[in-house]
Image (cartoon, rainbow, N blue to C red; front, side):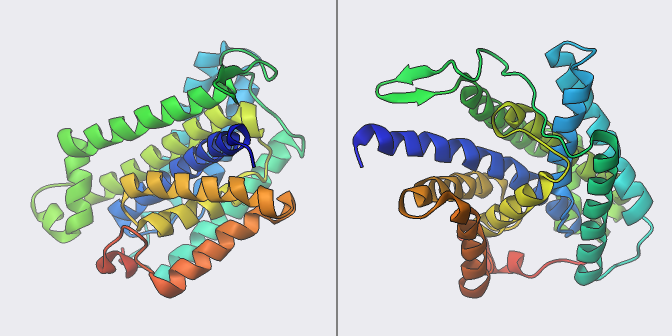
Length: 296
């Protein structure tokens, strides 16, 4: 393998790894606030992309993306209010079944609304054939948008959780929900906020990757699997570790094409997930306490 091809694989791995990290961060936000593993997280990515494509017929691209994020936020909040809030200390297994069921429901609704066709937003800048040459490596302008916006999202989330009242209240609920209630924090509203915030992050991720990966009604499920793998790999609840784990998985997948057919690329994620669950359930960067899922 020559040097240029090596770095081209690195760029591709970073691109896809960033996408996986965004989905994993959505998993972590809900897990931190509730202890729930939301297997419908990938559908938020799909909804964001599909909604933005539909709205772009009538609105400029920035407005379509913003409206898609807001609509998906509302969907995320409604899911929590209608299907999660009324449950009293559900078991982990019950929550897994509920979120998987919600994923199937959202996917079927999307199929009826948008059909089976593959859709995509236009590139934010440039076109699919225009590339920026960095040394001997060609980088799509949309890749820069993906990495840049994802980095800004991570920075804003860090600021939100560390320096805003709502963010600190969510962290308090994560640490000890009963103590947070006694301090006057509305824990149920914090859970709803976590679903809305997770949906918004997923939707924005779906919008920025849509020009590269395209989107269709069932594209959320594979992303949910990859995002869950990254969340486990980094350690549940650790969003910064999810970024590192996402990049690691993306690069491993990218280089796997060099040694095996592209059809086997998804095997990498499943294999890593199984190994981590057997060898180190807390993840590479997680604590042992994180390995045991909390109840509502």
